[in-house]
Length: 174
Image (cartoon, rainbow, N blue to C red):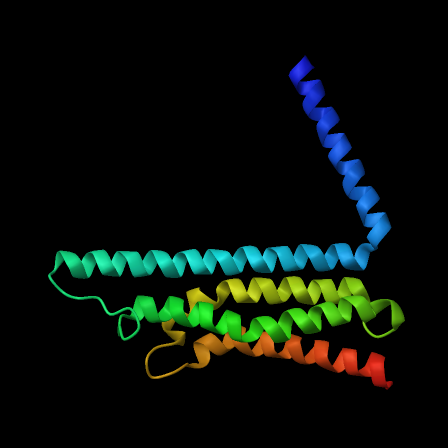
């Protein structure tokens, strides 16, 4: 192994040791919570960028065809899909993150184990990532939602409900 390879290996080992030290200081429940939260936020900003990109594409298309693009009253299905994707994520962000973190912090005191809470958090993020695909596959439109989108929204609501019930059980007793 050359000097560059040894330096890279040493840097990777140092990073792993630092991550392990941090994990032991804050506890695995917090590490799991931070990872899920970061993944959720990356997905959120991806959706924001996709929404903005669609707006720019529609504005350019309308300008090329001599039409005025009205961002807030557009009936374009693609724009509506990204608006609903971002809007629904924002609507559920408060309940999800607050109940997820309540459960992460309460896990040492009873209720569901932190690994189970983290797994539900990861499942929620995964389901959230499918929202736009199912919306565009016929799950949403200007008339409202259909059972297609419920394939992701209902399980996400159940996860939020599990978090709420678990927190209540830990705080108020079974």
